[in-house]
Image (cartoon, rainbow, N blue to C red):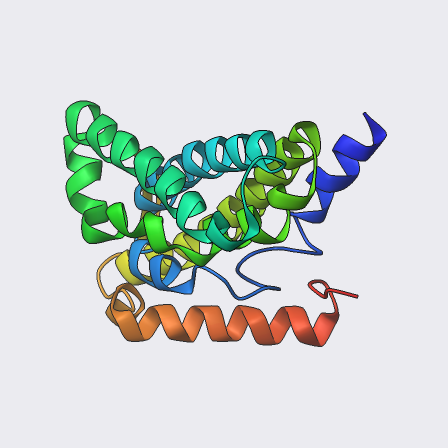
Length: 204
């Protein structure tokens, strides 16, 4: 259990995929206009990463080194296809909002990176812990970015139809640029600078 928690905890800060490893930035930039989208992408990544890490760790001793990357991609693509169909059938609005970035989880460097760098070299239990830790770290990054962009960019905060608050000053004149692509770069850049300055997110 100690090793499990150690591998899990690493994904939160030490190997945080967004703020430390700088992986998966394309979907991070694209879907963090709202908390709804951030949670939807997190769910997709959780299913795919957990499944991929588990399968890769289970077959790692049977996969020839020369064909491991194509095999990993087939595994990931199969899982992403299932997730895409699941979202289309059960969460059509979220599926539409995530758009092309849901099927593009196939080439998300977080997924393939963990399969190659960790799951292919470690047992199943440790690989599951790694997948869960990385996903939670990814979720925390997405929620942090999306909450800033949504709150300041729209002047209010709502999650799946539940309205939490409206900012008195920004309610009528929000900072609209924050829900545009330029706003994503701005928010992520400022957070990265803040974390590096304070030493909160560092890999050593």
